[in-house]
Structure formats: structure tokens, C-alpha cells
Length: 295
Length: 275
Image (tube, rainbow over all chains, first blue to last red; front, side):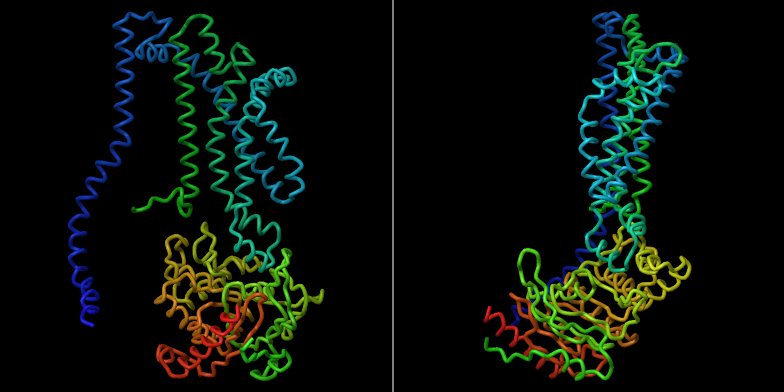
């Protein structure tokens, strides 16, 4: 009997010690965790970046590589500044097409997904065609669209939209079907109307999926806009960054080509960050993906 | 089958333990699923008004199916479910006025506790302000009004279940259907919630139909325990627990409680031996 009592009492004795040990360790752990988690996240890629750019500059200088083959980072930044007027105008054009396409993709993707969720028949009838639209390479359809559309801007918009639209459609459709089964029963029990079920249950449940789709489509709409412009190959005043790259290539203005390339990449990164921020702001109160856990 | 079957004819039970018309009456209800399984066979029982009845049995005995049929989530294959006391609407459909508590709390993760409780009222077209006020009262009734603005993920399992119960009672239902609501909780939390549920039930006048697979829980809570056997799901016996309310920890250790628990356990043992 006493054998039983001893192990029962043991934890009582251990508990304060454990707590003390934990309390003593806690601040230390916090300090080290700040140093070992937050800083490397910024520092590590920064060091890699500096090493890479430095190595690039050094190689270009050491081997005297001509600027029309591979310009050094310095030359690229110089060009970016000296050609800013042209590049900025082009960036605006590309950005306009990208965001218009993204907005339309979000609108039509979500609307179509909602329509699909209301009727299985509509979903079955149209979803395969959405897939066909998605799997056909945009480069292959772009020339047709450019012929059909009067305005090149409209043609670019359509191309970018086709690329960006599918992830939103398929993700949102999945999300609308993903509402908890018991919650669906509950809505049925309270005799919720179709509209109420959509508004209070299905749309909130689909939100994380929609936002994940939006993140993918943000990048895709930029790619769509750039690819379509390559295919269109139209120059002049209202041309975007893709045309600047083509033009710079023809004229062997390689530093400008790199500068335009740099701008496209940065734009992509910024779009991704914006979408991540939107997603975080909308989900931070409840969704697992946006919650920081202690352990 | 060696069990002395205490199978109760519907008419008899309807009169016997109650003075009033039953809240809901099931007459020879059977349910066969589309895959051919006979989930419930000839279930007859009249659930008294303001009664507390437990359905107890092993998994697969159809107790949840009965609950879902009462809720109107499943249709019986044969038999009748009527609501003798309910007001009937213009189309002749009874105003069932019931609430359901699932085994999981089944809260909307994107909504705060109070917004979750407001849901039934909002769906019924109650204005936002009134719904908020009434939900606050319901949250106070289950003792967590301090957490009205917390999100479900911030609450413990027991607290989530309290929110779920608040949501069930906010519309003042006549019948509260509970499908193993405390099965996923630890025993300490479970005892607390058992007591609080009894208090809620005494304070109001709804009928509780409580599905559980815990013998001790069913005897502690209910006036009658309906023992069910599986394959096909059917009532095997009805065990009355005629101890007065309020029941508390003292009752949990009383002779009556022990004797009833033993009786139920024996009957269950015979049933599973048969299986």
C-alpha cells in the first residue's frame, strides 16, 4: 500500500522544483530564441544575397566581361537610375494589366465558384471547360486573342486573366464544399435559407481557400501579363516591361534588359507580400495558418 | 435472449410517467439505411415534457440515428414521429422548436463565442441588438459570459461545449437533443458540465434526450435510461432512476445511484453477451 502512496506524492514534491526550473530558464530561452529565430530569417538570406552580388561584380571585373554579355550589378543599378523614365512608364503599364487581370480573376473566379456551389449540375457542366482553359498553354492561345481583340491592352488583359483565374476558381470551389458537416446539419436544423447558409457558413469557410488561390493568382497574373506582351510584341509608347526586354535584347542594351528583369522580379515579390498581408489580416483571428503557436 | 425485456408499448409510457402530453412521441419507428443496415427497429417511446431521458447503448445501436430522426436530419423508413404539443403552421407542419448539441462543440471558428450563440437567432430573423442581448444572457446561464468575445480556438474543450450549449438554449427550445456531448471531455470537466446541465434543465422547461455510452453519466442525469442493443438497434429495457433533483456529488455516491448503475451494467452485460 505504501508503495502506491509514494509515487502519488512524488509529483507534489517535484512540481515546485519543476516550476522553478522552468521560470529560471524561461527568460534565457526567450533571449536565445529571438537571436536564433528572428535574426537568421533576415540575416541568412541577406548574407547569401551580398555574397552572390559581390561575387558577380568581382567576376565581371576580374574577367573583364563586356557589359553586352553580362553587366555587373553596379552597371545594372546605374542603368536603372538613368533609364528610370522609360522603365517606370513601362512598369506602370505592366502593373495596370496585372492588377486589372487579378481583380477580374478574383471576381469571376469567386462568382463562378459560388454559382457552382449552388448547383451540382452547373458545376458538372462547366468545370471541365475551366480545366481545359487552364491546361492550354497561354502562349498558344495568345496570338488568337491578339487577333480577335481590337485593342492590344484588352488582349493582354484577357491573357493574364485566363492564367490567373483558375486557381481562384478551383480553390474557392473546394473551400465552399469544405464547411464542417455538423455545422451544415445545424443550419439545416434551424431551417436556414440557401442565402443564409451561403453567407454565414459557406463563404467564411471558403475564405482561407480563396485567399490561398489569390496568392497563387497574384504571381500568375504578372506572368500572364508579361508572357502575353512577349507574344504580342507591340512597341510604342504604351508598352510594358516585357516589350522593354525584347527591345533591349534587339538593341544589345543588356544592362537595361537586366534592369527591366529586376523590376519584374521585384514586382512579383511585392505582389506576393501584399497578398500574404491581406490573407494574414483577414485570417489572423481564427485560422490555423495565421496563428503563431507557442511550441 | 435471456434478458427480461422491459419493452414498453408507446401508449403505456405516454401515460405512465407523465401527467401531460408528451413533447415528442415516436411510434414504431424504424430506419433502414440505403446500404441495407437496419439501424433502428420498432422504436416506440413518448418523451415526456420537461423529462430527462437518456439513450444508452454500445456504438451501432442506433441511438444517434434516433436523435437525428427526431431532429429531422434523417427520415424514418417507417413509423411515426409526432409532436402532440407543438403549434402547427399553416402548412400543417409542426413547429418543432428543438436544438441539437453534437459530440464536438461544432462552433464556427471564424466567429466569436457570442456570434456563435447568436446564430440561431440571426437565422430566425431576430435583430442584431436583441440577438446580442439574449445571447449574453445564454452565455451567463452556462457561466462563460466573460468569454463572449473570445474565438473558439482560444477556449478549452469544456468551454467550447458550454458555448455550444448556450447556442442550443438561446432560442428557448422545447426539446434539447444531445448526442454524446461530453464524450470528448475529461472526467472533471464532465462532472461539472453534468451538474450545470441539470441545473439549466431544472431552471427551464425543455425536454432533454441525451445520448451517451456512459452508464454512470446516464444514471446520474436522467429520470429514465433507455437501454439499447445493437444489430438491429432496439430498446432492450427501460430503467427508471427515481431519485429527486437537484442531484449532486452526494447522489453520485449514494446507494440508489450505485444500485441503478449496477442494474444497468448487468442488463448491458447480458445484451453484449447475447451479441
